[in-house]
Each structure stands twice: as structure tokens, then as C-alpha cells.
Amino acid sequence: MNNMNKIEVLHTLKQLGIRPNKNLGQNFLIDKNTVSKIILESKIKNEQSILEIGPGLGALTEDLVKYSNQIYAYEIDSGLFFYLSNKFSNYENLKLYNEDILKAKIPSHDIIISNIPYSITGPIFEKVFYNPHPPRGALVIENSIAERLFIRNNYKSFSRITVTFNAFMIPVRKFKISRFNFFPTPKIELSLVIVEPRKAIDELLLSDDGRSFFLKFVAGIMPYKNKNMANAINYFLKKDKNFNYSRQHIENFLHENQIKNDKLARFSVDEIIELSKKFFAFLNK
Ligand code: SAH
Image (cartoon, rainbow, N blue to C red; front, side, top):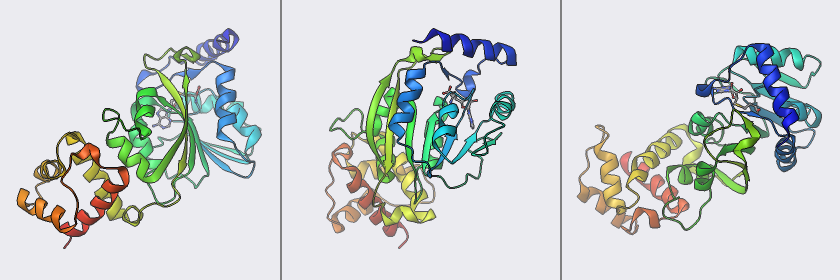
């Protein structure tokens, strides 16, 4: 670890009178090599616009302003926002917003670069990636979540986020990052993941209705991944008062569509998307 950076970070925080806020996932990068790695792996071209979520003290921003003509950075913490506004006042290619990323109307962008506030990883993914035209990304996230993004024929890691994420995105590379490269030191292990949009996103996911059904459906069935598909769908439907289908209806649906009533965890991501599409049509009949 480069201690000089840690001293700088501590000094700046003290000057600003800021105590890192755990609820806001404030773990600041204190290692220049890690910053370089993130920038290198994100392969930015000048003309590509960047969304940075949670610039903090600007560890990544300092490099981003050198490599991109247009950066949008959203920082929810007003103290940090004023510090950043001052620090980067000479950079016209950086637009800072003192807003909650989850509530913001974000301008279109090519790449997302972020040391993600860990507690809102899921909602951030939903907001920025689960749409018809997702950007690329270089993201520092919790290692256990990173593991679940990659499809490995591993029952344990196959989960809700595996299915939803891979419906829109392709996880490309992953690098472990020591938690000691952040201040305060987080309790969890971290990874840098490089992600790209899928070339073809299923038509179901291009419409607002289809997409929100898919997200709800996957959230509803994945807790039952060790059950067979008919049972998993049955559990999902039981939780929603709008539906009134018996198990027999579900089995008929599977049969009519020639879908095997296999254990849910044996289905591939694309098979689950296909099934969702057919089931969405079935429910709207
Ligand atoms: N990028 C910096 C800071 C990472 S810590 C670095 O790597 O050093 C995460 C940052 O996200 C913090 O600055 C925190 O204030 C900010 N943040 C947390 N929740 C946010 C939200 N909902 N919208 C925007 N920023 C948020």
C-alpha cells in the first residue's frame, strides 16, 4: 500500500471535517496502483462519455478528466460535492451533480466507472444496466457479488443477480482488489469487474412492461432455485394476489410450450428469459 495516499486522504477528510459515512458506503481509494488499474482496464477513448457514481474525494476523477472529453459525476454528499467543485473548477469536461444517483435523470453515457457504494449495488445495477441500451462498465464491487455475475456451472453462485445481470450484460474480466487499498478498510473483499452490454437483448426486455415483469419474475422464482420450475412459478404466483392460477395451469403452460419441468438451477439464463417471455404472454392472454 502506498501510505502517502492514505495520509493525504486522512488529511483532506480532517480539513473538510468529514467522518466517512458507512451508510453512504464511503470507502475511499488510497492506492494509486489500484486507480491506474481501474483506468487502464476501462479502456477509455477520448470521445467516450463517462458516468462516475460517487466520486468521493476524486481519486478516480483526477484521471478521468485527463482521458475523457465528457464526464458526469454524481455525489450525494454535499461536503464532498463542494470540495470536488472547488478542486475541479478548471475542468470544463467534468459536470458534477450533488444528487442521489438512484433518483437522478442521468444524461446518456458510454462507460460507467465507479467504486460503487456497496449497500446499493443492486438498485444501481437496475437503474444503469437493466435497460435497452446499457453502457460498458468498470466497477469496484463486493467480491461475493462479482462472483455471482459470472455464469459458472455452479449451483451456489447461480442467483437472482446472475440471471438479471446476464440478460442485459456480459461480465468480461474480474480482478481481486485488496480491501486495504481503501480507507476506512471495508470488512468485505472487493473486486474490479469489467462488464459489457450484450449484443442482443431479448425483445421482452426492450419494453417497459416486459422488463418490469421479467425483473419481478426472476426475483420471485430465484429463491426457489432448488425446486422444479412448476413449483418455483407456483410460489411466485402465490405471493401476488393478482394471479389466480393452479399448479395444474402452470404444468399445462410448461407442457404446451415444451419446457421441461426440471430443477430451476438447471435452466440457463437464456432459457429463463425465453420462459419469462412465454409466461408473460400466457398471463396477458
Ligand atoms: N470514488 C471514490 C469514493 C468511493 S466511496 C473513491 O474511490 O475513492 C462511494 C462514494 O459514493 C462516496 O463518496 C459516497 O458519498 C457516494 N454515494 C453514496 N451513495 C450515493 C448515491 N446514492 N448517489 C451518489 N453518490 C453516492
